[in-house]
Image (cartoon, rainbow over all chains, first blue to last red; front, side, top):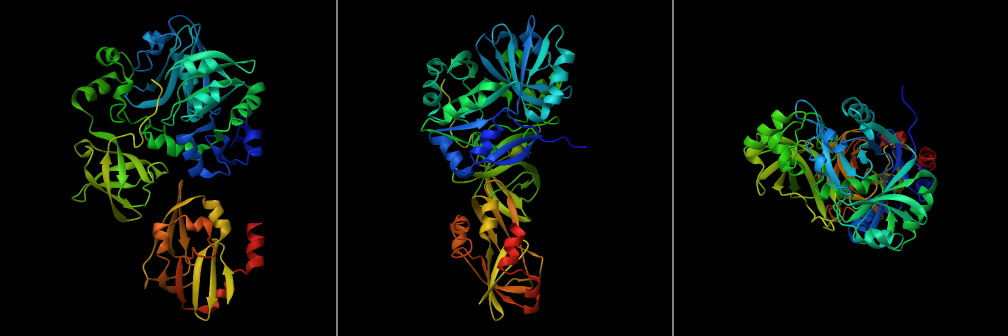
Length: 365
Length: 121
């Protein structure tokens, strides 16, 4: 049995703008617009691009000590997350694998959480079952749009001056053309920008106001994927999943010092052991030498022909001007500069292990 | 000179037993921006339905299938450096192979332009 794909409050707008709609995690989403993935990608790196990310789960957590309670599910220091700040995190399972990644914001009288579209059905019950005394409410009546790129500050700031004053990973409630929106200075493209949660009834109107700016064009899932990959950001289901630990995924930076030392989160034993001793495999950047893109599941071999890993994400990087990829390799082979072979359609292609990201992140610190 | 079309969205223009093969404009539009093409070498023989190359767009890889039996006599080498030509002029400058057909009767299995137009609606 399959359910009909769901539509976001911006579906009609996507169609009106010529968006090519595809099924993504049960949602009918634009993969690209007439400008094309390459053009949308460049638009985001050079000016500003607008993405509909309403398919992601928006969740309100209310209760006492929500941040503290979240620490029982996540390795992040959410208890000390200051009001008005957001933080990247993930749920871990008892084996130290990643159940999903998420953004948690301390909104003062509540916590605001954004989770992946495909994992809403898992994450909501998970939080309900384990956050004692916390009211977990998934909200369905708000759109979520991301305005990303060096011109994002002007696109959003022209309509909402308060947005200009924000720094990376800050969140506020502010009016946009008379509508109260939650504005967070963050995103998943490696560029400066905002994610804006807008009441459904006003979503299309506000989105059109952003798009009316000369520097802002709509972009789809295709560009979102190439942007996040160039920025070295993991995609759940590709680069991280229930079996991969945050240490393998090179996400140790997302676990704060106190939590690393104290533990007390699911899978802490494995994660702390890998922090101390290193993990057997690690997620690295991979730059093919030629023009052939290396996609997910392409085998990685070391110079002597032994298999050392597999690509988890790969595409043509429009800003890099060539193929880029991420994948897991056996830890001894994970140093930048290591020469490897990628087995694409049975033929070996030269490639090099590189540091991530491929494109310098451009956040407003 | 006659042009035929395959269900896999290739065109072949035939003169005697030699032909030029490429992908249709419709196929190029469906693929999106082409960033890479993997071509076989001149001299390679192939059978109808066999894979004779791969075209990669920003997002995905798509195989090129031989519409009939033959041998590659020339490849369009300009595509290696300029795969984007497959979007700009797929039915002209961005031809992919010159081929020598081994069984011209197989042409009867292909479509003419009207048939192809009906296929892609």
